[in-house]
Image (cartoon, rainbow, N blue to C red; front, top):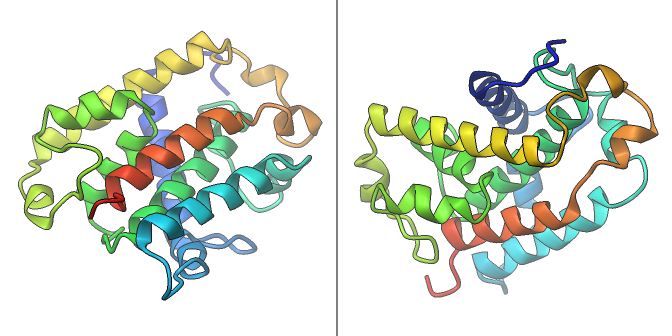
Length: 210
């Protein structure tokens, strides 16, 4: 495992996490399967997303949750195992919320919007530059107007933002110190950032005033 993270490695890890989240992994529910469990006829997509976020926070906060993922996921070797696990959980949550909002998770443009939510509050500025305002439902026309070059630009900005965030938390060079399995991984899960990311995804894909 390389000790140094780079922007390209972060983007590659996002791609890995998204593929696993959408296509599913034996023993773990896919994003679509999780979303199905929250589709209640008496609730709006916004309310459904809130329930999903609360479930994710409660489940992820339990001891050994992240550690247990190691039994199902083959981690990418380019980033620390704990980061890969957390990115998978957060990407799957965002994708599930997008599915609740009726978005096609196979669309590369939707995938880029999912990645944007990983940037937390910075997602608002990243998406505003392409004419998307968080808090208002992203229309299909707005998605169609996202070009390939814009997708690349957004992904790079998200990669840079995550790389900066990981550096601030002092986890960029922790790879060789963290075992694939073990209690250390479980202790690193950041419920606060996961809740923030979930709320950003909710407001982007299932806004309250839709």
